[in-house]
Image (cartoon, rainbow, N blue to C red; front, side, top):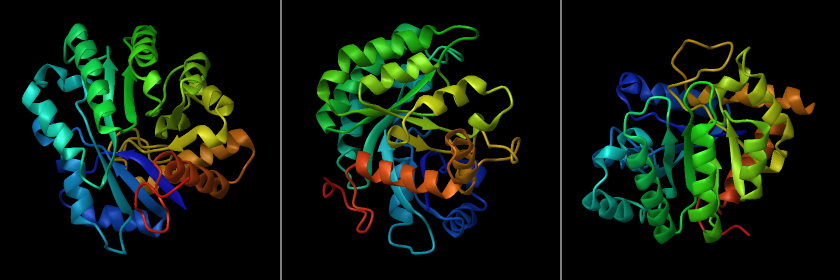
Length: 280
């Protein structure tokens, strides 16, 4: 059994065969996935909720949970009205996290100062909603600038809440991972951990304790080997588990089972009923 802790299946790249993609995930042991609610900006950040509602209770598909949040790419679109709408969406029973939010200095689609201001505000909203946060962090080339800023902001504005979070699609160093673990975060690894030049990511995955780890696809991006270059999908998350299993001298199934337990425990979900607030 596996859980894809981060995927974007709402886009046009899945319109023709979304049902088949999700059936294939279920057939390959994917118990659930977290549909990330960024959409194309604040107006469509309920995209994960809509998917979760569409497939709710259908046994041939994975369970779908949802998040809401403003991605750093769209930080310039943040408004007070959008904040109010996010808080309303966050009350939906399928919403279990706030994100992905954070900093992206690689593309700089929004100015960095605006990214920082919106990141702070998104953390404040997540605090009001009492939801953990999902972090996107991407530095500019050959730099740790976004990591330094992101982790410092988390330490100042988020860690005191005790609500925790996830560093999604982790690409930082072992030191960044340690700092995040010390702040109570989970570390999530994606398909790029299988890439030949991804040894720093594998080094971090070897250090991170298995009970603090999640796996994801970040579909449709970053399809793992041997699917690299194709559109990614939740069924491929087993390849991420396989790479981590190799690093920890375990079986793929053991890593799948442990990361599945981690997901349900972190979010306070009962794996039998799929309802929140019943785990201890």
